Length: 459
Image (cartoon, rainbow, N blue to C red; front, side, top):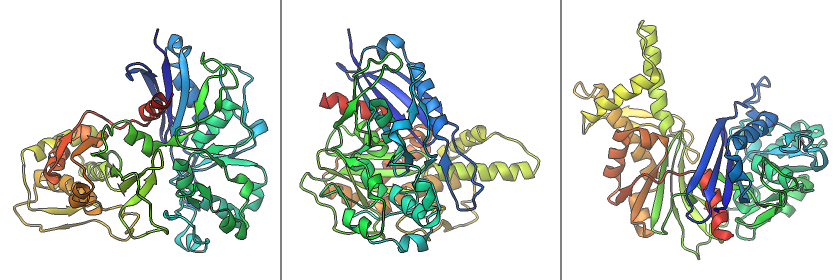
């Protein structure tokens, strides 16, 4: 009889749970539910917070939909989820197990997500310089704590432990007195040196930072503890992995060879490949570089071009047309309009129209917004515009990580993934034009599957 790994992804908008069969590494069952946990911002500080209780309730409901007989044969539980954000709690009262088969959040803060905008550029520039190759941005856990130190120091006094939302779930499942965190999530918080795998304690101490809130760092892929109670039929004492980053897990789920690069185009877009085992990142942040280096597994790094502009650009264009049509007295759903636009573009194989789609800017160049050039009377059809827009998404990501960079790194294949690529044939055509390499699809990046695969490979 087969055993299973339970992989859980506590994402920004939804929770996903998968049961991975240990022998054949096939997904035996999966469920996903939206969390509907966003809280309104009445503060005027560009806060982005989510209701912790709703997230945990959704997690419990999601697991409850999985086959009970298979949950009883879970050998290990793996957690991943949204990076950068922060949740604070007191271990002794951080959850309630009185319902026995599941826990509910209790005496925790709300989740302050990676999308939080309360830390202005001026505020971030006032922080000490980190001893790290990664810059600190608004929405990062360390930056949020600094903000509370300055603006609401009494808020921090109510809590003794902090971590990401996935770290919190691990702590509650295992009944830990503190929080353990892998370098993948620690790096996403800021003020963490991935070469030494240590927090910048001296720098933070000098700035008056509450060091007791820093989690204990453990290797990525290691265990954090064992379940303290039975959980939805999963036996008490089941090993639980230390939580991992959702980006790293999504890459792990579909990068089958060191010579693969993964191109994911969903809401945003990412292009990444694994660096050589002996690679060391820069000594200091490179804020104007379009390529970042994220800690992966076994002391390795991923080179990442993470664009803010992907499928969201196409969605914005569709929303714009829908709004225009509504103003003109015509009605057509977004999904129907999207399909019609793709059909128009499929009939227009090329276009000399040029669209730079960076309407959201980029982290390394936030002031570089979108523009359209080479406009003529012959290229104003919807087919021309959509074809040029799709090519622009690819032109942008390849400008951040040029094809020559991939070839120099020994990349021989592009693994295409993401909802936008799966839905948009025009986008796939432009991918194949942009890369003079083999392009394969069908290995969709999935963080929940990835975290289960990590633990399956390490059992």
